[in-house]
Image (spheres, rainbow, N blue to C red):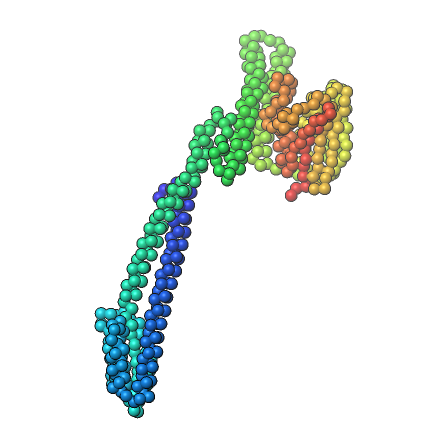
Length: 444
């Protein structure tokens, strides 16, 4: 038996049903046979008991009259018309008083032994053995046994065939579902499984599978978009580098011009290195890398240090930054600085000129801390908020500012939150957009 047939759900269900039906039918047949056997035995013992009572009465009457001959005649008369009975009456000295044995061929018999009053003076009892031929009942029992055995075997075969057919019909929805899944490919992830004709038991599975397909389709689209973005981001600086190198090789330039070209090339190379570095970091986070926590007495101080790094950018945008709240805990300072830097950079990019960016640090009773970066600006729609931390997602399809931002900043924030056992959050209402993370304060 191959592995597929051994693991077949239909075969296992059919086998379980066959064994269960066999066990049930055997119990029923055994019960019927046992009840019939008990009824036959009870009837046989009752008949022997009736004959013993009659013999006891005849012997007591003969003993009271002392008439031995009369008892022998009555015993002869008793045996007339009872070919199924055998009788042996012996005196105490071993002499046979009366005897009529069953034929040797009738070896299936039921026998009882008892004592009768002796009509002979000087003897008190006659040892008596009464036999009943039960061959007819035994033959009936054997026939019943064979009938029950045949019924059990036939019932098992019938139930097994019917069970296999019912299981095969019952599993048809799974086969139809498998056929729908079989046609799915990377290019048909937009297709959803049809559960209209499926049983209610499969509805949750179909719903979850369709949700999975939706996520895969979305991820695949994001991956395709990311591939295009990465190709665009890398192609432009690489083309510039190659063009500059070709021009430098085919023309005579001064030392200052060559230095200027090398400086431009260095900026492009740094941009490429930044993209590669971010992709490697996200890959490590996906493989389950955890934060290296150290004791941090003030999270607000970490945010202020990050703000100092962005001071020039904030001044150029006419923005101010305010930190509200503080908390201590165990965090990976380098990762948090990177996450806060990305959050502040994101808020700076979309904040209204002349407004203030507020960083709120709020601990809760569950050993967690929420860090929200708020900025005033254009409202963000719900769809964009739900995908803001998705990797490779860009709200700005025109890729404005692409020379400085390659669309992985908030994805890195989400990865850092996960590495701290936390989550991300984003909301926008009344012209205020809040983007942040919730972290566990201490390692578990």
